[in-house]
Image (tube, helix red, strand yellow):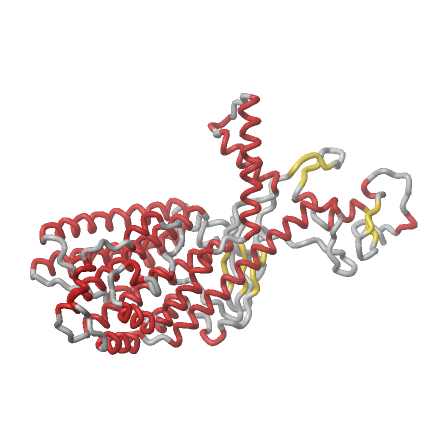
Amino acid sequence: MVDIVGGTKLSEMHPHNKKLDSMFITLSCKHVFTVAALDAICELRKYYTQDEDGRWVDFAPPPKGFQQAPICPLCGCPVNSLRYGRVFKRANLDLSEQNIANSSRRSIQAVLRHFELFDAESAIKNFKMLLGRITFPDAQEQQVAKETQAPHILDTAPPLPVGVELLGDQVGSHFPLPAEAVTAWGKAAETLLLAYEQVVKVAENRPAHVQACEAAVIGLSHRYLEEFKHRREILKGGIKPHEKALDQAMRHCGLPAPFRAATRFRVEAFWITIGIRFLMIEVALGGIESVKDYSEGFKIARAVWMDFIGFLISSVEHDARNAIQLSQESQSHRQVVKTTLLLLEAQYATARHAAGVPKETVEGLRSRYRNGLTLAKRTIAETSQAYRHAMTGRQEDQEWVDKHFVQPGNGIVDKWEGLDERLSRGVFHSAISNGDNNAILEASMANTPVYSVREQFFQCPNGHVYVIAECGGSMERSRCPECGAMTSGDSQTPDRSNVIAIESKAPAKERGSQSWGQWLRSSMFSS
């Protein structure tokens, strides 16, 4: 049988016929098929267009979703004929995308397991004990005048989470602290620093296949742009030349859209680094404020520690902005909303911390509070409106943004309004307690799955990864929570434009199907 579709045997073929249904291809597995049969098996119509006579004449718009590599229907060996190079190259790119997303998922799960062993209260007691053994020299006062470098590092830092060295080993290089104090901090925050270092690797990960494809697309788009300029072609519909060139380059490279599966996990890695830094603030502040040392040397050291805590808060704000930009570039609208909530909390934490570090006048603080309150209200309104517009105003999306963004955002507004009242009563307290951050972090990470045994990952037509729990089959039609594209079908059948992205196995068995918000709250921010 050489024509699976038509049921034709080799003896029935005409050797001198030049049509595709009479020409043969022998695969590496030695099975023989007609060209027309293999074209159908490899779904070549997804990649090229045909004229009225059935001839392949041009590139087709790239297929959306993950594409499976073509295989021999008789033995399952890969189809590696050069005729189908565009098909299996695309499948290999998609496989690379699956692998990087899967490895990122495992890395994030490994980091979360570190927090099963972390006890904030014990870390604070340990830090207090270690600080209590240190004799802080008064001579340190001469070092305080030296301007710290860490805050300025954020101005030139790449769009990645702040390096772990700035939070651990090199704290003493940027903040004038005794070596013994830096060592004490490293021991007290050892678990957090280790977890932070691991999760930063996920956020930094830009897979080689993504970089290679981006380079190819950029090179082709530049060539097409020069061709447009040379021909002085006038584009219709208000399309700009560089947009047309980029679209044509993507089409000829066979890419439907930028790779986004790995981007999801990069953003989630940013979230975890922010959660870790809030824990670091808790440990540092708890240890410092519990030390009963009234010497001049410790007072000076305490001021430096408060500067370090301020840097931690500033780094959270800096990285939240980077995560928002990354989410916007991948058109992950829910991730934009969730990360904006973390940014709002970081901005509030910065103002609250400033109240406990007397570097501003009361009027200066009040002005800061009023500006912060106005900014928070405006950000909540603009972000929620943009989300509703992007998701075409569906009722379920409006309910989601109200519950997971507007309501916790209004809680931050209430805290801003409470700052001025505290200031009027002369209360200057910079402690950032668990209660301040729990609700925000949980709201930010709500509905972000810690993958259970019975879940399967799918990818929407725009490249966003989503999950179907329990049996892995969809019982009703729904849309991608990030971009609104149609995702699930009905009767346990996914929409045809969606494909399985990652098979979720047993690593999360011990946590069932908790959301990350529930998991982080119970293990990282337990009171």
